[in-house]
Length: 313
Image 1: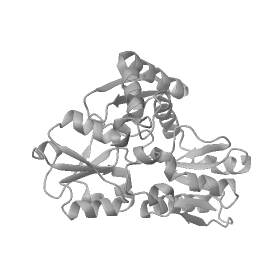
Image 2 (image 1 turned 135 degrees about the vertical axis):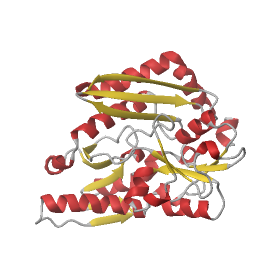
Image 3 (image 1 turned 30 degrees about the horizontal axis):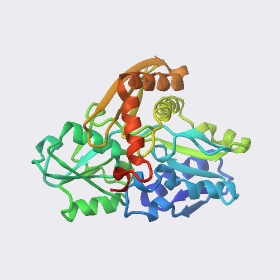
């Protein structure tokens, strides 16, 4: 049994994994258990305010723990950097397009938007980069599934929206993409574009059966990105991006951390052996801390602390 959120994109991802498993194990009885998560229900507030990425996976993990499902399929970018004890990401599928997509019905590019134009995004990572590079724009919150966000754009609530390219392509909505944003312009979230398959750590049988779905190069890149984020306490409260690419037998990792208002943005990159992916992520995080990221993180923690003016606004 595969546990999945019930959104159209999540179900596409679950069916994709279902088809891969069915090809490997044609005699297996594979079904999908659709679940609604807290993150799906709480569309009236930003993820940073109501608990972060874990709101999209808790119900799925509960189903695994209770034996109602054997595996859960996630967008890796939605998975918290530290899993609960007893759980493991047993396989990371080959990454699809990791880039962010600019979508507008009137303008060809972010640089063409007039001053004061409204850009919708649900991500502090995107907000930070937008505010740093395009301070004349108005960045406004945008929640909901992919079709809901596009409908809000079409209804005129926004002049443009930024969404993950992989999700649009998986849903057959590639024609809505006005422009793909290169990582140099909008650094992706850790794990963006990759699918993760989670199960209980004690299920050695499942871990073995899922091994053929693990894409080694993607898994190593994602490991570097998640280690970078973990070392910087990465969550929905921290504007942070990371993107790793294989360069021969080595990994090139780019990362940034900044303030949500774009007033500070620190970025750097590092290259290392693919076999040392997690160490590479930690090393890049330490480099950014030495450049001032520790001060940014301390300020973000102060702002999000209970009772702070920033945390309640």
